[in-house]
Image 1 (cartoon, rainbow, N blue to C red):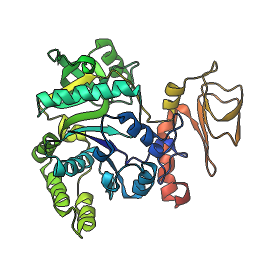
Image 2: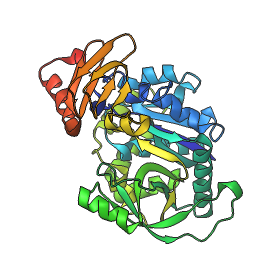
Image 3: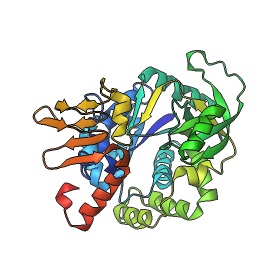
Image 4: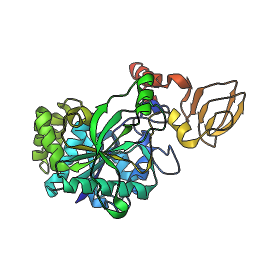
Length: 363
């Protein structure tokens, strides 16, 4: 039985000032007229019913997400007391799922990806679930055929192809994973593209809940013990106390480092859908395109001698740019950002400075 786990605990600091602590990018309409988390749930269609969807987020965001996804059951929201990266998040979700369905298959995905079309995504997940059904200890991930030498994505090097699997419209291309690679520099990324055996790592996975729990028990035993204590307290009056104590004690670690780099039977499926990780303001340029001057405009805007610039605002406020080149301009009701497009990683520093100076109203 297939369950969907949507990871929605990020803060989206690189999208400041629009993304804030209480309303990060997964709760914003970054692309189109739906919030990102709404689009992620809608993308599942009839693949997974509402009672088999779990949203993993933080206590700070749980209320807003529950309001946004009001059709989901009350216990569909897993509220983590603090951020501890993807491995503890996924492990806790696996324990929740396996309580009622020990043989459950999990499709794990972030809430902030832009994917289309929905039917291609659903077919790909069905194909991955079939690969897991045939080999229950198998881990399946999705690789994105790279369209340029990106330095901001991790890569997957594919190995030998899987034997053909006749599944009608659900069939796809699968390969054994040879190696996971960290985010490369520009020269290495270009070499990956030249070799033709590398995919972008989408961070979307399909596996048995039991498989990922066994892997955590083997490779992250301390984490697994903390998670087990949390699971044992579920439904008791002390659950919140145990959750806060045990989850906070877990070391922050990614699922790639905790499990994927150690697992034996890992398969990558070449994604048949369009994909983008909305990780920074420059992502908007890829998704929305640019005008003849290279500008990406999502605002009421008047530009004079403006090139290569991203402008974001609302239709109630006119933004005028004069003589700007390769900039990011983002206007919100209480804060405005003007930044060098090529130094957008420093937006994180802005958020840190706001914290240090006690300007919490802008976080």
